[in-house]
Length: 255
Image (tube, rainbow, N blue to C red; front, side, top):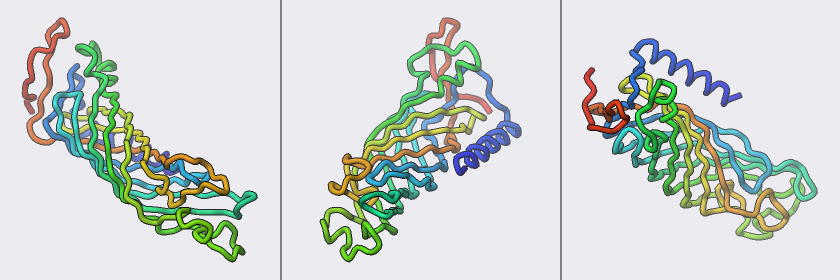
């Protein structure tokens, strides 16, 4: 439900911007040396507990662009992860809720980097498909977690093994992003981004079980689907092509 609401809001915002501003139909991609982006999304957790509960996440990006299609940048995110374990033979239900703040250095390359002059508006938009990856660090604070396998157990989970639960953790992670940028105006782009994160820790959800059996025995992973806007900062350029699709030079775009 939250994803549907986010998608509706994002599409309405994109439509409003394009209605009040001239949508650029030229077969090139405007860009500036620096861009600033803001987006909102929902998280999914792949951890020790069986079921993920969707939570909100907020994302801000700042990129240094080398051309229309390649960049390096910083990505700041803040949000929450949540998951639960259903009643089974070893528990009558476990829950975990944690808030995180992460910072990553990423590199991005778009489809347009590998092809020549787009022949039509559809091809120009397809050039906005991109892949990005990098390295990051996350601080994770577990504020709500079940400490007993069963409510009537006299012992806590940590009485069996202190390593089963950790409520505060710093961890490195690798983000894998696939997304799409759509130009609305010379200054603004609509962005859809799906991010999958692999953490070098099994404590992102607070748990690290070896026995009894849990949902996975690997380090935790998460994903975030987000929608937002990216803004060009400063002078806006484009790369001009001749009739043969050969890149000639970078030029300023007039207002």
